[in-house]
Length: 415
Image 1 (cartoon, rainbow, N blue to C red):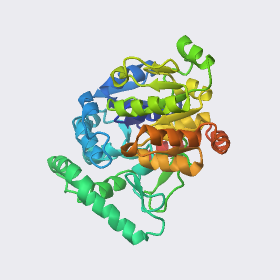
Image 2: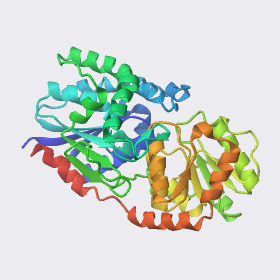
Image 3: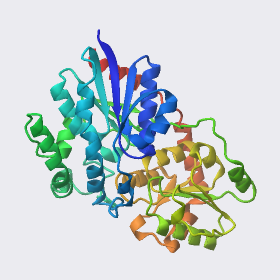
Image 4: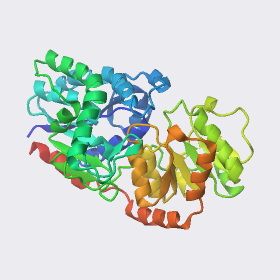
């Protein structure tokens, strides 16, 4: 039988990269050949693992785009930023040895290119890896239209109509010109809907989040494999720095604030955080690699850090206030830490809704963020015994993900 080669393709920030890396490492542990394709700036994370890595072009200027974190316009920014990298995938896959059996494991936004790869390499298998529930289209609850939940009483027919309208108004005008131009260059027919196209591409779809966080919906693509959160720490033995350890020992448990490592537009967020903590008498740790977003002088009960491993930090804090990225959400669930989610765009609103449903925290739409509203939400989660008890119960469910069954399903695609 030809050698089995898994090619793992991802985009985005380190939060997107790490779950894909954990899956890649699990496949390698199973004895398979594995390569990773991802943004070139993530090479320092991948190279220490020994995984073969092909860096794809990435324009970090997109982090300063004013619409990057907009609830409806953000997708267009991400789409356009990722196209130069995605356009390289067919040539990379075509250059692989012909005596290999290849399984291409792709981020959803790479699925149009995965279909092109299969057209030029018969026998190629495609698996879609879904990091968050909202990446899978559904008409079932909870159904979020950006920050707005669709009421439970809205019938399924009306929900399907809403999805079609969203696709035609917001998604297809941005994506289909690129997709169909690439298909035409490969002699393939055009597609009429991006969402309908990408759910039909994979031979197997895989969720990288557990059933208790998001139960399988009747309209999710099949066949489907479920897996728990594949959390990955690039420095698993890393301890807290002396500065952080000393700060934690000097007073009450602080509240940690992070808008995400890729967010360079969080000056207002941090101003509100400082004001809310001052009024409530809370100590705080502010996490961002972009120091310019913070005041030059910080009050004494506040510590700034460019990076602290959440695995080491979260067990020692009162709450985590964050943007709602799926990786950060999962880390807080694992640590049993109360959460206050301040979502801006993309999957963050849906993740926030699931945090609320689990009882492990609250949320506040970033578009409505003020220091007064933030103070009020902090009062709902800090030292709230009901929230703390819910966090303990969820943490008990959030053990290390067993990825062996998923790896077996992936390997079986070529048997």
